[in-house]
Length: 106
Image 1 (cartoon, helix red, strand yellow):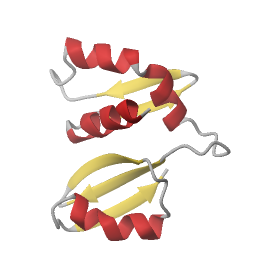
Image 2: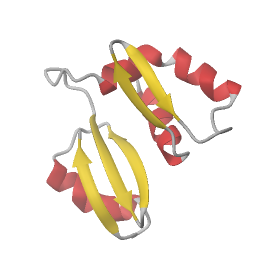
Image 3: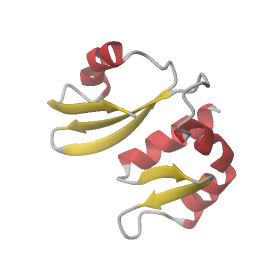
Image 4: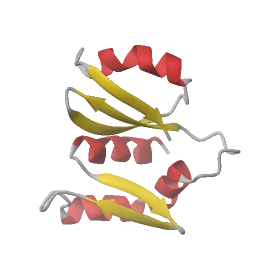
């Protein structure tokens, strides 16, 4: 499962937005960013990614956060499913001490 988390964090850093809708992945990316290899990785991890992005909060799945740091948007998967308060305190370290403008837990 950690490979799916790593993949979601990797795509977020590339500016790719991935959401789940009706059992399908919706991918919005800048032109040319989704390579054939990346598409293959997303396909191979589709079930795990759908599980993480599922709106079913009864499962003990990782938390998903949308961040704005120094004017750049990121989506971060937190495998520890920390509280928003705990996660907020660790964001500066995770993003090199940048100015955190927004943190929203999905």
